[in-house]
Each structure stands twice: as C-alpha cells, then as structure tokens.
Length: 162
Image 1 (tube, rainbow, N blue to C red):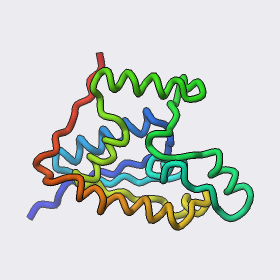
Image 2: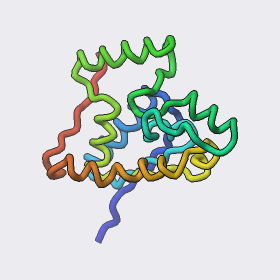
Image 3: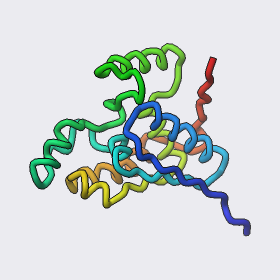
Image 4: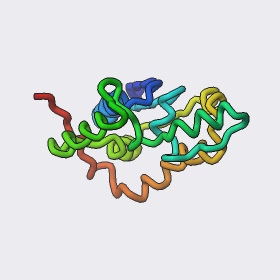
C-alpha cells in the first residue's frame, strides 16, 4: 500500500490575510487528497483562540496580553493597512462582494476535509491561555462533524485574483 502524501503548514502569524492564505493552501491540499496538518504557534494561536476569551492567565503581563489580544478568526487585523480595524473591515466587505470564502468558513471547511490542528503547548503556556482555551481549540472537531454531512458534499472555493 502506498503511503499517503502529507503537508504541514506552520501558522505563526495572527493576521487575517496570512491566515487566509494558509487555510487556502491547507484546504486545497486536503481536497487533492493530501494528509494536512496546521501547526499553530505564537500569534497564530489567535486564529483558533476563543473569541474575546483569555482574560485570565497567571501574572499581570499575561492578563494584560490577553486583555489586549481578543483573538478569534473574526477579530484578526490585516498585515498591512489595518488602520485600527478599518482595513480589515473593508477587506471583508470586498471579499463578500466577490463571494470569497471568509476565514471562519475556511476553518470549518478545513476541519471538514480532515485537516489536523495542532496548537503549540509552549506558546499556549507562554501567552497564558487558560485550560478552557485549549479545550476550545480541540473542541472544534466534534462540532464541525455535526455541521458537515459528508466529505463528498464539500466543494473547495477557488480564490481568484483580478
């Protein structure tokens, strides 16, 4: 029996455009039949972090870090031209207008296609993410199975540039 081809992506950026590119690659590879793993570390944990969560943490620096850093796929800034959130909002409007897949939809699709998520435990500890967030990160799996009926029903949206 031939061994299945594999792909691993490291997501260390918590910016919307970079995360969207990573999930586009992951979903395309998974749709092509590759076994895909996405490893989240440092700011990349914000992509799968519980939205508006993580106010806790041991010590005032971790608490402050988590208070300033809301997390969640819908709250990510752009890597360039963010303008205090206005740039990200405009980009999302343009993406909706072009019927492009949003980041949270790409995450759901990735899990439905069987992409494995691995969160760096060292980064989780460093950033002071509570046990509840680790649970949230790995909880997605069971919720997404309920949302997706069969793998054959999933179609990968292509993202084109004009």
